[in-house]
Image (cartoon, rainbow, N blue to C red; front, side, top):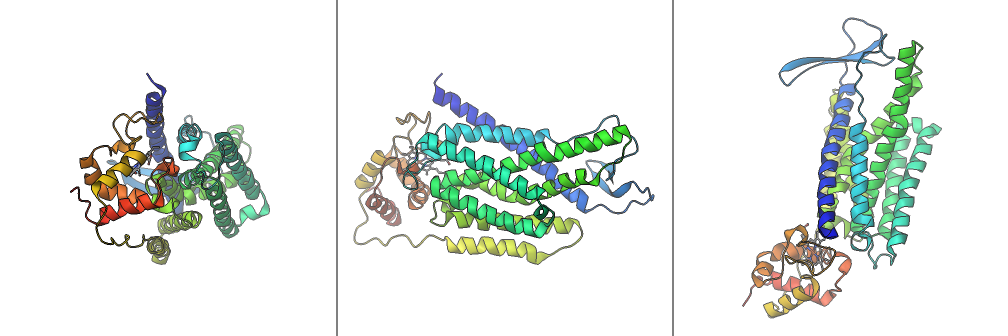
Length: 394
Ligand code: HEC
């Protein structure tokens, strides 16, 4: 079996696993944040119980109680939430390596942004992943870490700087995924390096009957709150490869920050709502940011067709020269075993039928990837003029 075909399977299986474990992780994050925020003082006055919640779900009633200083005796079976996080990171990182590192010249490098060799790109990508965690972790451990508002502001600046750097060295698409990988790494490292070790200390103290130091739980709470605010932004980044209108834009870094901010605001709306505080302006602020982005990046009117629209023969010739090495059932480009995304553009009928969809890719310059086949501006204009003129084949 050839390696491109095997890589396709690795890609599918890793992506499948990544989505499943990511849903389990973020689902647990939503669940516990919501639970924490809706806890009510315990009715039976047990001083060990910080709060409790009654819920009905799946045909039964549940009674959840939070023991902030631990129960008197350690229960026989204690459920931990950590493998969702670890599997999400492992599968995501493996997928990132498979696509953005092994195929760096297709996905991570854009010679028009920076003419890097694959090893240089991988080196920068690694350095940014490590630096993000080290700097964030030091900040959390410093005095500033206790100030939620200061951390929110620093977080936005940190994101802006990271995405500015990433978009100055990588392809737009690669930059968005790089920033997503940095946030994901911080989230998973929070679980592995801080939340779980703190909880292990708590469990050991309960088992030994010694008092729990509140700071152990405090560390974990701080990091899970941070993780919670970036859940919506990171999902945006993970689906962003489908939307070149963001990362092909000259201000791609700013759009990233704006969309992340919108996600965090909406998340905050839900955090407060679970506490019984409904601030619609918080939700509205997120929606306004998205609306401003949408208006700001709206594409200009398609170029006016002067005189006759280009003939189909000219369009077909451009397609054959610039697109078909990848977009045919058996691509001649060795990086692909099958037409990417199933998009085939090797016959006149297919070119015509899919005119609107490929025009969007040509207009935003998402295709050809990093202009690997060297399409010219004049050829782009011709393709778009043909589509604007009614995409006729006569
Ligand atoms: C070097 C290979 C290559 C070349 C050349 C190429 N493409 Fe693509 N194309 C891809 C890949 C890879 C994807 C899938 C991108 C992804 O993973 O989102 C793709 C996706 C697409 C899609 C689907 C986008 C989506 O997300 O639904 C369209 C449409 C498209 N290409 C059109 C074109 C056109 C038009 C040209 C020529 C102007 C072209 N491509 C040239 C590799 C190529």
